[in-house]
Image (cartoon, rainbow, N blue to C red; front, top):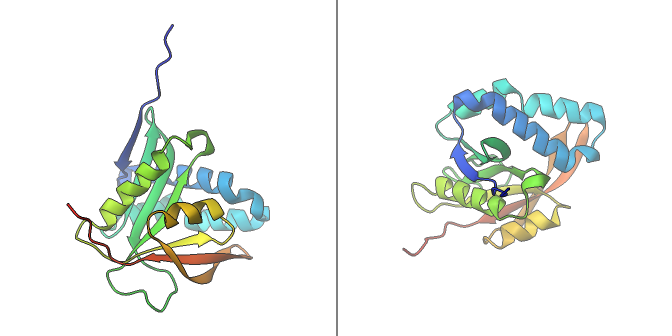
Amino acid sequence: MTNVAPKFSIRRAGIDDARLVADIATRTFVETFGHLYPPEDLQTFLLDSYSVEKQTVILSHPDYAIFLLERDGVAVGHAAAGPCGLPHPDVAQGDGELKRLYVLREAQNGGWGARLFDTVLEWLQREGPRTLWIGVWSENLGAQRFYGRYGFEHVGHYDFIVGNTRDHEFILRRDAVTVAG
């Protein structure tokens, strides 16, 4: 008997994927951060941020994109991007933001998180170089190192609201870069 290696792929989600996106967004957030919040705060946040209805609106908007990381056709991660909405005085019209990047623990450490991020960066810069932004939890040192390798630097902070809980978040920015071709 031979072991078959799992087949990973990345694809852009469509409106018909709203329920799938809501599910993987909820699962990855709970797995990553669920232990930090009182159950009622977590539930409030999930209902507001990751409902099927909200994902449908995002997926139907041309300025936003959500990408799914799938293993053998099953979603194990996702990334979302769109116009920057972070509260920083230097955010300008046309700036882009990585809104979410999560991969289930079971699918981590194979390089697919980086491939998913590369896919989002390519989409964010599809019309040319522009300033990019990311909000990241102040205590998520691994994510900060990861984004630092891509040239993102800490430029500010804000409160990320989960129910009645306020998390201290860092704002990271990478100025527009031209990729030599």
